[in-house]
Length: 211
Image 1 (spheres, rainbow, N blue to C red):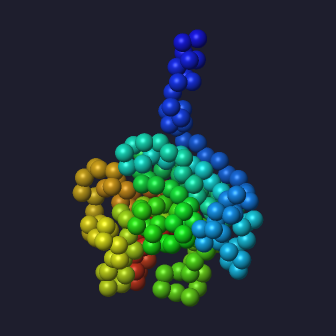
Image 2: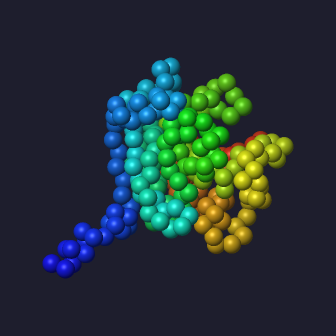
Image 3: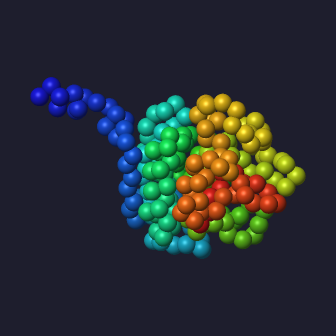
């Protein structure tokens, strides 16, 4: 009896202190969030019915458990949940995981918040073509620690300047979030056939994985 009482008194965070994930169609409530938050609209290359809403457990930079939100294409939904299960079990930290609609559909604001995200109906950086994000088949992972670096070496986000040099310096959560070619996190994505922007030739987009 005391054991059962203790279980009920435990915080929600303690109760899901292991990986949990859930995939569901984009509900009317989520669709309205996306429209209001300017991440989806009529004319986007993928209809919202072909997208899936994911909820996944992650550990933040303080080691605390959270349930994150992400929207991806239905074709990659299951493998994305498996990728993040492996990242979770490997101890890879994620600063936060919220829908881009919470940032008004602004890629800039999402990056400034160091937000890990996927679907966003927008054009590719410096292009008139749709981004892979507009198809729900790209993920930006810890974008402050893994910045986009232009061909002339420029980084737009000031908080990312300290991560221009791509090395592991210590074992802090921010340092462990840095993605390098031979890191386990990169290998996990690669094992599912995802391409990494850190291996692009003209520019480097260390946060970016696409299928």
